[in-house]
Amino acid sequence: MNQKTNISRRRFVGGFAAAAAYLSLRPERGAWAQTTPVVVSEPADTYDSLVKLCYNENPYGPPESVVQAMTRALKYANRYGYPDGNITVKIARHHGVKPENVVLGSGSTEILEIVADAFLQDRKKVIGADPTFHSVFEFATGQKARSIKLPLLPDFRQDIPAMIRTAKENSSDVGFIYICNPNNPTGAIVSKQEIKQLLDGIPENIPVLMDEAYHHFVDDPNYATAMSHVLEGRPVIVARTFSKIAALAGMRLGYGIAPAGLIARMRPFAGSMTINVLAKWAGVAALKDTASMERVRNDILRQRKQTIADLTELGFSVIPSQGNFFMVNIRRNVVSVIQAFRQRGILVGRPFPPMLEHLRVSVGTADEMDRFMKAFKEIVPNAAK
Image (cartoon, rainbow, N blue to C red; front, top):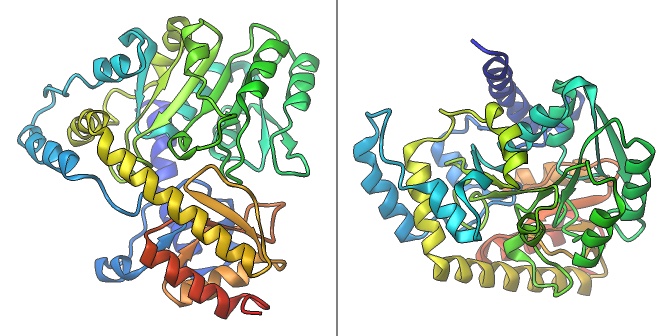
């Protein structure tokens, strides 16, 4: 059994413990250190009754076209060498690249792990914002690598000049720079101008990992995906997932797009058996069904706008978000508030140090957001003034 398999199984088993800690809301047991969604052993009826505004999932579920594709693929469930729907080729065509520019992962989180495995050997360093999607720093720890975490700016944006300066100061030791765009948990973007500033300003040998898990929900014209920089041959790795807009969080499918040389370095660390047949066929169908994806996007953006407006009207500050989630400053520590929501059957995001008075809330359906707002007015002092 190889080292990667051992680590993955430890993370899986550890996930159950973290989930139990989260649901029992005992921060002294380290529940808040868990950043990656985990399997929760809730009874189905209890789980189904909860309003799940905690993991930035798609509340509507996969569209019928994707469900049908998975149903058709069930006939291959007993086979190893099954047809996979040509998923890698379809992803490559979707982005105008070649299959040699694509690597698959079990969700985009595995792409982050693959990048860490490939580029943080010999105790290299990763540079990233704090807070951000913390799994990349956990993977660095697994490599006995150092994470250089740079605080957000006062307006909660990522500090691009500081990243450039830090990369230059540590140029020989940096394995890669990590940018989550839009950033999780804040929802703030790094503008296309800032991305260009970063790529032009850092040493040319340093790769940049762009985590674009939430890019579908951006409506800011100053944002642009980093795919164009891959096409230019810049040392950029774009991580994407089917977990959000395509509603396949439970199926675990993501991918990385990068110049062929970077993909070649990553491929030895990609697991060949981590993605199941249903996920692959679901991904192919999701790429085709752009109309369903657009409906989800429009609904999420409408609910995001309305809920932020409602909270602002109550006098609460909300960080402008370009994701399917937002952070509201509740002016008190979020731990007891999270527990109060849980007692009302609503799951909201964990604490994100040092932003311990900011509550992260995923955007759900209209009914779910109405239920959230009703509970918010009951739980948070001065909310109903």
